Image 1 (cartoon, rainbow, N blue to C red):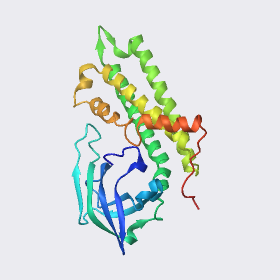
Image 2 (image 1 turned 120 degrees about the vertical axis):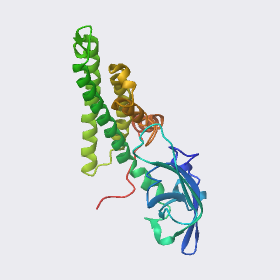
Image 3 (image 1 turned 180 degrees about the horizontal axis):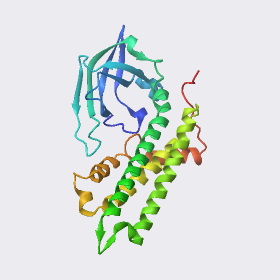
Image 4 (image 1 turned 60 degrees about the horizontal axis):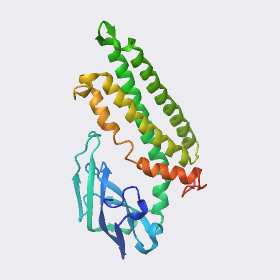
Amino acid sequence: EPFGGSDVAGMRSTAARHGETYILNGSKTFITNGYYCDYMVVAAKTSPESGNKGISMFVVDKNSKGVSVSKLDKLGWRASDTAEIAFDNCEVPAENLLGEEGKGFPYIMQHFALERLLMAINAHARADFALEYAKQYMSERKTFGKHLNEYQALRHKYAERYAEMDMCKIYNFNVAYKLNKGDYPVKEATIAKLTSTKMADEVIYDCLQWLGGYGYMEEYPMARLFRDSRLGPIGGGTSEILREIISKMVIDGKVYKPATQKK
């Protein structure tokens, strides 16, 4: 939400029950696929006085009366639309309630591990592609009679960046394995996103540098990779929030448990 960001419990949207409907009011921002979607899953407070225990989830038809959507103009990730959505006395049928009333907060938090892992894998894959592209370019580009990949300074920096990418890739696959077998690796997924998105930013920065002026041109993929990568430390929980979550787990001993169990 505009005033919430990573503070899920701080949301201001409300859904007041009136007979067989809920009246939804509030706004959401930075919503992926919000502009072109047909339906959306919306979290709102059904019991504002209960804090995070008063949040519920609903399925809302985008064409419902009282819903307005505007497309946001982003720095990167332009292949994916991002929207700002407003709800003005939008009527939602009571049957559109997802799960139990008041359980929205744990439902949301439970899926952050998967979202963070997806962002981590997205980051290492982008860095991997950037390194492959830069390696090919450096094997073809000559300066002072030598290919770029023959200069020791560039070779060693490339090796260092590749090692960082590969470490993240292997770690991310390990977290994916844990999720796939039914574990709830909140700490590991949080670490994966924090480290992989930072790594991708640094790797792509260097890869663009190795291409010189061509890296700065939009007709080459490195410019887009550079813009797209910057979302990594922001989307799905900022790096600052992730550091605090990790601190709570490894220093304070906090344990996060899933809201629902797989059958």
